Length: 363
Image (cartoon, rainbow, N blue to C red; front, side, top):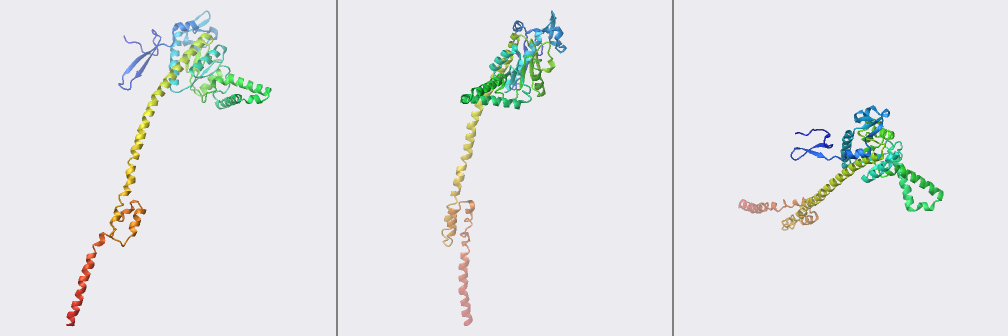
């Protein structure tokens, strides 16, 4: 029986993907193991939503039922959307992209910081400063100021300052480290942003949408899923639920980083193999140049031909001075013109004939 084709399979709770091999052009169906189980979601309380009177009608498609005045989230939709977000993050990081974790509510501060550090990404878990994305250059100035303070402290400059001024600088450094410590090494805008509570992080959502940065977020029953590119219907108030889903997004980033490192390792041998080929090519190019330099020595015997003509010593001096191809001029030397000599011999023969005629006339 043919297995149903779609983004997910209801019986196995997994995803089906198609990959086309370049060699044979055949399509291969590969089953991706599910990244999370229903038991984990239930134990973490991911299925609990808000009260029915506080719901957003746009979340109707993600709600399974309501019980005792509380909406219950459809975990099938949670698994499906989490798989989509997982694959997106994995491919993004494998291509060299970065992700910014954002969660300033108390339930998410610790989990966001730990998981972001584990996968080597950036995070904001204390306060979102207005313009952190849209006015990124100004934020970089504050980060530069923080680094300068740290450098002065490491050099021991604080020891030579008054205690009151040192305390003032230390307070500034602690405040900047608390707010900007998670993005201190972020040199450019992130390629995606992962948000825990979209209602609390309204400013972050607005800035990301203005800059067209993809948004991955946990969508509770009181949120608007249209504001997110990859909504994950889940409870964003329970600490265990937030930690579980943050860990899965971090796992996707770790997996993508491994793929990126593997691609970089595969690319290294190719660069080394090309180096000897280039050197050999350079040798091949330089070797024919050696006989080219010796070629001018061949016309040196040419000056020997005008030796018998002692009347013109100048060409002998010109030969060693100019080793250029101009030396071909001695080839049509006057040696070939020595043929007119017999004409000079014929002339004296006719000369004595004239006195004979004069003698006959005298007789």
